[in-house]
Image (cartoon, rainbow, N blue to C red; front, side, top):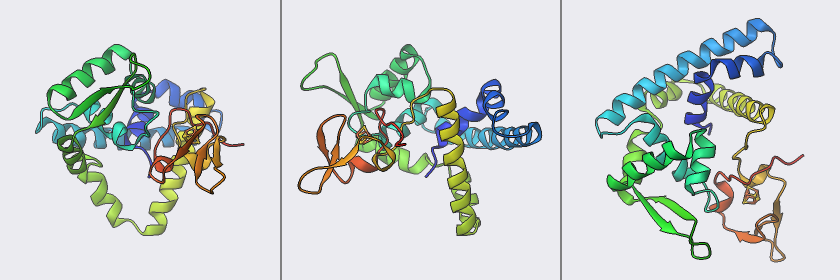
Length: 215
Ligand code: SF4
């Protein structure tokens, strides 16, 4: 599934999008692409804002909750959140504080490094996120598309996000199966050759800040 907050971010940065896509498409395609992305992001953000307001939440706060619901255990730190969302550490720290106060997020200190903290959604946070993300507007529209179109759109968006991230030297935040460190342990289980640890079936489906696309 493509990442909603990444798509919203794509369209918010007009200069960046135009710069990147002018290298891959002719100017007409780039303009058309930008127009679609901008329209899409506005519609989604408006819908997200509307649903968030009912619960006293800003879109960025929902984006933090969403990221933490799909990242792996090596990527659930405030630093990873700020890298993923492209926000400053200060802004992310404020957002996290608000979410903790609302009882939607929990923070725990790393067992080996007391300077590092890990973040997780509370059951209340998970329940709320399930109701609000993806926005019903998107789900309704997607349900009306033929399955083939949904798959094509999904693949095209994945390609687009990857091209943008790679072209700008940004972290890919992918999953294990597309990572150069993806390996197998002697007993055939999943294994990360970077972190040197066994991975669970759940781990390998989650977004990782250490992900590097396999050649
Ligand atoms: S294999 Fe790659 S994506 Fe998976 S945990 Fe290791 S570094 Fe992260």
